Amino acid sequence: MAVLQFFPPSSPVVSAKLHAVVLFNICDCYVRRPDQADRVIGTLLGSVSDGVIEIKNSYAVPHNESADQVALDVDYHRNMYLSHLKVNPKEVLVGWFSTGFGVSGGSALIHEFYVKELKEAQSSIPPIHLTVDTGFKNGEASIKGYVSSNLSLGDRPLAAQFQEIPLDLRMIEAERVGFDILKTTVVDKLPNDLEGMEASMERLHSLLDEIYKYVGDVVEGRVAPDNDIGRFLADTLASVPRMSPAAFDKVFNDKIQDNLALVYLSSLVKTQLGIAEKLNTAAQIL
Image 1 (cartoon, helix red, strand yellow):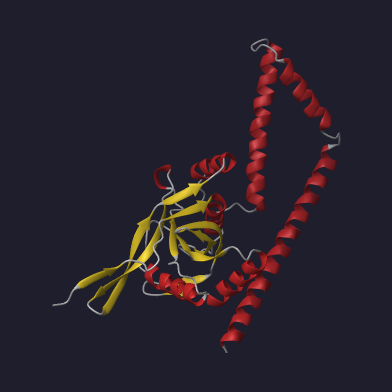
Image 2 (cartoon, rainbow, N blue to C red; image 1 turned 180 degrees about the vertical axis):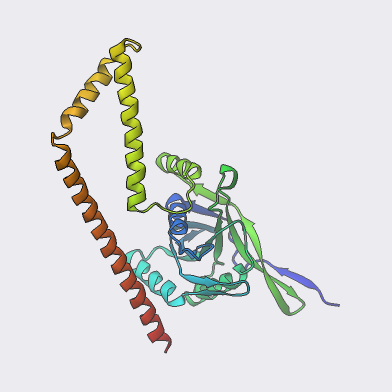
């Protein structure tokens, strides 16, 4: 008779502590992900003490994902890890993260890769798998940590079972404020320079309308004057340089051209770096 056996990790992890900078970095990587990517996968760095994993840093790892397989850029991961060790040797590999709600179908394959990476680094801890729901459903972020346990039938291993562990999100007051704002500010993508400038100009136009209405109400006697607001408006107007509309249009248009040139050059550099990285990866494979 076959017996279904469940083997707990050889070195159990009691809990994990997550620093807020890691969460912000994961969310930033998700917003800046390629258009065709549904989620972001990356490496977690930190330290281990008394069965508690403290997650202090992270970086995203490029990957290709389909319905039945996941391919990580292993060379990128290892180069980034070596670079981090040169900067801070105390932050070692402790696991990996992915965006989305809970454990997905390909999580076991990626988790097995990080198990091998930790074994090669002669680490006795099991890697932690951190999931971050970047959709912030119902205004709440689902952030969970898992460790893997072996599930076997007799002597034959069947699969890896993920077991949730307590996760402590460590935040100071300033980080807590930023996290609350992050939960209420959900965007599909970051605006480009022109979209950001358009939104700023619309906001400025609405503020000018409010100021114009307030001044008109004070002059007509509908609103009691406020000396503090009056002094603030006077200082603001005094700080604006006097120039003709034609001169202002010229300065504004010149600034727009400078911004467009910077956007074009940065896009060109990004494209060249991407091509160089792909050529380097292809050369290493060959």
